[in-house]
Each structure stands twice: as C-alpha cells, then as structure tokens.
Image (tube, rainbow over all chains, first blue to last red; front, side):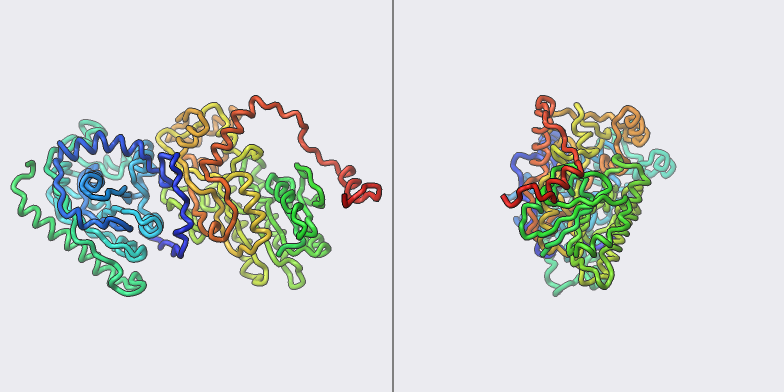
Amino acid sequence: MKALPAPSGDLCDQLPAIEPERQVTDWGRSERVEGLMDATIYEFLYTYWFRCEVEGIENLPAEGGALLISNHAGALPPDAAMITKAIKEEHPRPRPLHLAVEHFFKGYPGFSMLVSKIGGIPAHPANVQRLLHDEQQLVLVFPEGRKGTEKLYKDRYRLRRFGRGGFVEAAMRAEVPIQPIAVVGAEEAAPVFAQMKLLQRITGLLYFPITPTFPHFGLLGMLGYLPAKFRIRFLEPIPTDQWGPEPWNDRGLIQTVSDNVRARIQEELYEMLAQRKSVWL
Amino acid sequence: MARRVLLTGLSSFWGGRLAQELERDPAIEVIVGVSPQDPTCELQRTEFVRVGTQHALLRRIVQAAEIDTVVDTRLIVDSVTAPARATHENNVIGTMNILAACSGPDSPVKKVVFKSSAHYYGAEQDDPAFFTESMQRPHPARTLLEKDVVEAEKAVTAFAERNDEVAVSILRFANGLGPALRTSHSALLSLPVVPCILGFDPRYQFIHEDDIVGVLEHATKHDLDGVYNVAADGVLVLSEVASLLGRPLAPILPPWGTGLALAALGRLGLRVPPEMHNQLRYGRAIDNRKLKAAGAPLRFTTRETVSAYAEHLRVAAIKNDNGRPYQYEREVEEFLRYSPSVRRGA
C-alpha cells in the first residue's frame, strides 16, 4: 500500500447503476464462476473436508462496509475461501466478500482470470477505498500478506508483522469498522516444510514451497489439503470513528491500532489452540 | 459561454461530428475548423482552413477571428492510423503550437478544451481498478503513443497554470466504439472471433461515439474546468464483450511472447498497436463519476455500447451502403457559402 487514495468526496451517488442483464460486476467478479466454485470446491471443503465451525458471526455488521482482517497461512491458502463460505452459510444477511490480493496475480495467465472472477481485487488503496466507502462492501485483507503464506510449519500460528498498518489507514479513511477474524486449521491443512529459493527464481512463482503434495504432484498438488478441522472466529469489530477527524494523519495511532488488532488475533489464536483437543477432529 | 469557436482536427471523426452539433446552436456565431486534411463530413456553416500538421500559423487565425474557445480534438490516439513520427509531430509539437496560439496577454481565448486519452494512464499490473483524475500511471509510459499523450497533457497543464484566466478542460476518453468510428479496437472486435491472450480476461470500458460527441459539446458549452475522465458506466470483461457480439473468444495469443505473436498477426493484416498490448493483458477502467457529477450527458453504458456495435456488425454485411462517402470540394463549398446567387435564410 503505497499511494494514498484520492478523497472520493460525495461522488458515491454517481456510482453506475447495476445492470441486471449482466453476470459480471465492474470488478470482473462473475456470478457464474463464483457460484460454480461455491457449489463444488468450496462446498466440499467447507462441509466435508475442513468441517468448518464458525463462531461470532453475529459480530459481522449486516450492512455498510467493513474491513475484515485475518491471519493467513498455507501454500495456496484456503482460509479466504472458507471465510467467504462462512459468511454465505452462517450470516443472516450474506453478502459478497472481496478479497484484496497482491497484484502479482494479474501477471499469471489463468490465475489472473480466475482470481478476479471469484472476488479477488488487486490490493491497491484506491480499490479498497472505493469498495469500502463508496460501495459499502466487505473487503478481506491479510495484512501479513506473503510473509504469512511463506512461513514454515514450525512457525505456525505465530503472526508475522502486519505490513505497515496500511489496512488501518484504509479503514479509517473509508470510515468503516475493522473486523478481526481468527482462523485455526489452515496451518495444518497446507503445511509448508521448506521454501526453495532457487526453484522460486527459476519458475518465477511468488514462492516455491515444499508441502505434503507439492511439487511432486504438480501444480494441482497445491490444492492437496490435509483434512484439518477449521475453526473460524469473528471477533468484536473495532470502530474507526472513535479517534476524531482525520485520524490517519497520526502515524503513531495507526501503528498502535495495527499492533492492537494483531495482538487480539494472536491472543484469540492461542486461546483457540489451547481449547483444541485434536487437529483433525 | 462559447461564441466563436475554433476546432482543430476537423477532418477527424470527432472534430467533424462536433462541428455538426455546434452548427445547430444559434448561440455559437462562428465555427472555424482547421485540419491538415479535407473534412470528412458535410458541414453547413463551419469554415474550413487547411493548416500544416504542426499548426504553426494558428495564432493569426485566432487573433483575426477573435476566437474565444479552442476545442482541440486532433490528438492521435491510435498509433495504427499514422506513422510514429507524424504522430509525434501532431500530438506533441502540434499541441505546443496550438497552446502558443492561445496564449499571450492580448489573446482573445478564454477557454481551451483538450481531447486527451485514457492512454495517459496506461495499463499495468499494479494499476488501481478504477483510475481517478488525480492518479498518475504507476510506471513511465512504455509506448511512443503513450509518451506523446503524457507529454501533450503536460504541456496543456503547464499552459493552464500559466494562464489563470483561461478555463482549460482536459478530457481523458476511454476507447471509443460505434458504427461510424474506425479504431483498432473496432477492427479487432469485427473479426469472426475475438482474439485474446490465453489465460487473461481483461476489463474493458468503451464509450459510444455519440457520447464522445455529446461530452465534447457539453465541455464546449459549459464550464468544465480541470481534468475529467470520460467513459461509459460499467466495465465489461473481454469474454462478456465477445458474448455480446455473439462471437467466440479465441485465446490465440500466447501469454509469453505476445508481442511476437502480435507482430506476426500484423504481417497477416491485423495490426494491433503497441498501446493495446497491455490493455489486452491487464485491461483498464477509469472512474467517470467526476464527469457525471458535472452533468455531462452519457446515454450509453459500456454494455449498451457494445450491443449497439454488435447490432451494427450484424447488418453491416447485408446493408449495402449506396451513398458515396462525402467528398470535400472547396469550390462547391465556397460557392454555396459566399456566392450572392445562393438564396439564404430560407
């Protein structure tokens, strides 16, 4: 998150009207592809494979924008899909969730098509601002980013640095609450045993992990998740309108809030891990 | 309020259509159109003056006709239409000269409307999903045409800063599409299949040709000071465009070595200009809300624009256009305008 988004002013009412004939949104999200994924892979993983258990879904605001913050793990992380599915299945008023993805995805053929079709958007501050503030949507951000998915199995559930606090600034500017989420299970579902720097350079991938099924089963091996039990907990949302006007100018405050969010998710993770009797059941 | 208008690029599609629209408004006293080529559409009271590509002698016309509004529609936004050098002369040197003609302490010009292009933003991997007017491209321009557009706009911005009393509007147009408009995009979309890069489904935004003219007219008649993005509502992905056209999407371009494949296609007669390459890969969309808030008329959404083009394509093969294209003939035009034998005021 480098450049600051331009202030949107009162242009929200100039947003284009929804055309009911279309199945794709202006962001490139496709109802059909998403529906297909949702009915097959997501459904299977959510219900049978990971047997997701969701707590505190009532904490997620039923309307207005919200910035969802979660821990992140796994070579090809299943956590985003499971959070999307959890909102769809459990929330009384399900809404589409947009996932902020590093813009690298736009460079990979195939992947670039698929990610935007199922709700991924490039993690640009202007995109997050438009979705949260102007369109009042839900956006999921993994502030750990690549550092979270790169980390090895031995470092599981130890949160990495939360970027530079860009997500706090984004929520403040958009005047939407921050919704922390703690996810347990993703680390065991797709454990990473090692990172091959050299192979990463040769293949040009973001990283080259060694997992139980990758690379020896090929790229599809990235999808070979172990059946760990998933627990997703939605924590109390943190309102961002409590610090007076234009709080984003205070870098110290942003840092503090960012650290607080990180600490809350970390605490929650430790608690959930302490209560967990089995990784698999 | 514009009364005495000078139009550059009269022979371009946009210039000609705009002149036709402005002619209908009796409040506009004088319309002078300049261009290096002959006009391509029929005009009633617009006066045509042929100038060189560099528009060097424009100042004398501006002074003599006491022009208060200059509408610059001459920018070349498709590098297939002219060689690189001519494009540079027209886009950069031409802009410089036109601005020079408008400046000076005794200049009668109160307003400049500059037709720019969304190529100003380029199309890159780390772009925002919607460019707003205050944003700049994340990387320096890659292609000659994009460099020219950026440079021309820089000159216009500098002009606006130096001349506070002149209202300058810069309009950044998305790709135009319509039955009468010939662009590289319309050529690509009129093929039996819509070529795309394997594994990419770029986001596209078009603006209907009538809306291009409507927005230019709005900017000429009203005060739109500053920079405005001009695009239709709605952003389609290329696969959606193809299905609206009723044509299959053909991923014939490889994701690696796309430039080479496109060069080979160029040999076969389908020229895809370099500024389109990244658009075919990453796509681009611009935020038109500032323009809509300024009250500019936009009648078509992107989907409607593409549908209208699809309808045109379906009948174009069947409809035999018997009418000969308009041919400018100076003597005839001058006779009709100035001869005492012609009865006017009817």
